[in-house]
Length: 216
Image 1 (cartoon, helix red, strand yellow):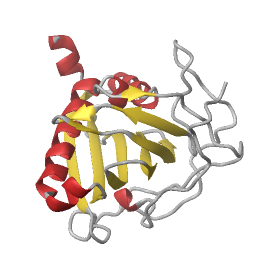
Image 2 (tube, one colour):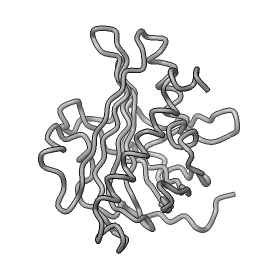
Image 3 (cartoon, helix red, strand yellow):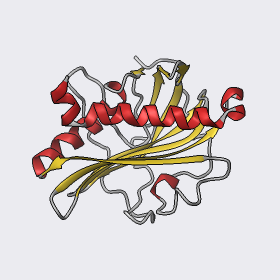
């Protein structure tokens, strides 16, 4: 059963897809604070496929210490999201989401247009938000997606999660984001936005990286 707390709304910011812009760090959306980190996960196709499957099963969020509510698929089954190439240019959708996939506990995999509510705390402050999947990429050497805020968040903006199997056989995980402070405390103290983002990035890495998984 779908929960009535979800709403079919668009995201609450204008620069949709801006996490794919090559110059995000130099020219972020107005009043936003950009962030980017990349980590090597290993090498080879098996590592790439495994990390990609974990990512699309929401592991970065769920194993990153955030609580997820029900994942609501796009209200329009034909919705395919916004797609971008590696240079940040719009392209045709990489795939359609007609065949919904689920993980072992029945949670739908990441799908373009899906909406999810998250709960949790970072550095003692809440990170509750409603998020929408902006796009999903599943290509031969690139897997990932982006989330945009719909509402009820302390910041407004977008974050993208991309796993790449590069030509040198190395597998890299890159997270990019831009956050515009919304809550009064964050507007008064932008340093808290940066602190929040650093902690979230660290959690995502621990959730996806086999190095951290093998050490726990």
